[in-house]
Amino acid sequence: MKKRTIILWKKIIIRSFFIFLFFFVIYELIFAPLTKINYFALDGFPDDKKEIITEQLKAEENTKFLFFISKDKMLTFSRSKFKKIITDNLPNTKSISIYPVSIHTLKIKITKYNPVFAMNDGFAIDSDAHIYKEINDVSALPLLSASSTLNKDDIKNLTTVIDKLDKAFVNINAINIDEYNDVYLLNSENKGRIVFRLNSDYDKLWRNFLSVIDTEPLKGDLDTKKSDLSYLDLRFGNKVFYKFTKVDVNSIISSATTTATTTTNYEQASSTGVLERPLR
Image 1 (cartoon, rainbow, N blue to C red):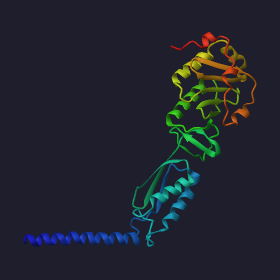
Image 2 (image 1 turned 180 degrees about the vertical axis):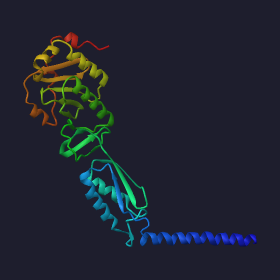
Image 3 (image 1 turned 135 degrees about the vertical axis):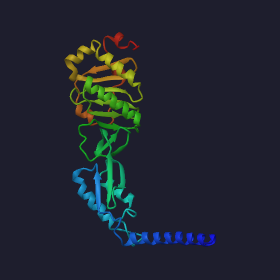
Image 4 (image 1 turned 90 degrees about the vertical axis):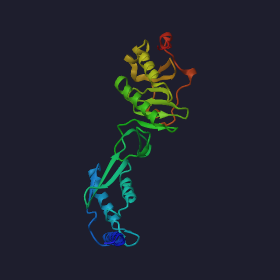
């Protein structure tokens, strides 16, 4: 065969292939069930939500694309609409992966936010400082109220301090952060407040705290009347102030703008020389 004839036949074959492919795709999209989605494999979903979400996904499949193409196939389903259905039902969803695992099965895998603090009105905040609507019970977590926006490092420092306090001193039930970035850690059992700056050197802060609770007379006071601790203030470097008194913790925790007593009203430990000695 002549070279020109071979080239012509190649062009004919290639064009025929693409024409066939075009009409095959059109036929498949409109009529054929070859890639029709028949099953949804839901991974990471709560059992009580699987049925209702599946029904809503199937209802979305029955809608049309460009008025005549059904959305019930692997090539035509609306990924954005599927994600919206999921987040509407599960607002605590962090990420969504959607991909086919067979010709007729679409797998949808989700991960959830991991809350570290509860917030008002059913919201929570995770370790990345992302605030979202939480549908699960987070009443066991400390209640956070902040007058300023927190970042990832703020949340990390707060969770670290609270975890250490839970193990070494007292369980923290609430956290109030005022407009001056003063942090008030509250506890409903011993009624006290622990106060420090949000932008503190947290290693030094923790060393100061351990030093002061192990120093007389505070050490003895904590042994005998810990439930009467009003506040322990760590905002002023190596100078730690504290006060024991009877207070109504409910009024403290319910207030999102709780502020510490002014410095002039503080009662400082009698062994001030020990408490104010710089840590080395």
